[in-house]
Length: 159
Image (cartoon, rainbow, N blue to C red; front, side, top):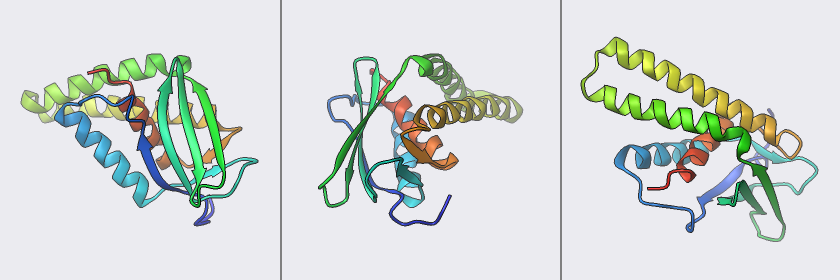
């Protein structure tokens, strides 16, 4: 990816109508993903307007919606992705995250490490699936895909 300063997300929000109150662990994951994403990301619309971009992520029916606007708010695009291909990964990711958060309370370091490796593997799989789903609409790097996948998972938590 190039170092183009316009090919980035300047601001990202999760749709307020989608948000529920999260537990402490989920809130921490959300904050870390947002912080890391703002520190460093690569995001460029393919055949679209140049950035930097403001993005609002939301769920509408069975779709993930990226509402993308330009910094000056003169241009807008909406990208919809079906969530069907992500359902299994998100479900498995939630299950392994729950196991991980339970394990850090009482399990041995080797058990925690094994669960964390599985958690990271599923996270990588979800991020790669996101990159593939966006490939003809948005170009993103691996780290941006990982952070966005975390935020997509957070959007799926229903309290």
